Amino acid sequence: MVHVRFEGRSVDVTERQLGVTQDMNDRAVKERLAQHFDVARDRFNSYAIDRRTCGDIIVRPEAVYG
Image 1 (spheres, rainbow, N blue to C red):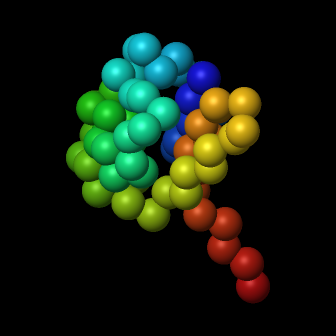
Image 2: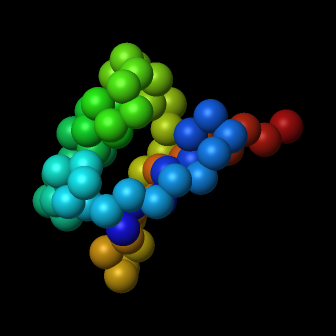
């Protein structure tokens, strides 16, 4: 499962829906997300990708502190 926090919404999408595999790098995952959400690729440039041991991927804006 790919859990995405984008524009104030939380969306769960399967890897199959996105065409994402576990061996894809972060850049490729972000490209697929941009295609899925029909936005420019650079919209996900500052997003963090967390890969869980269970296989899930979490995509979220980078946390800003201070």
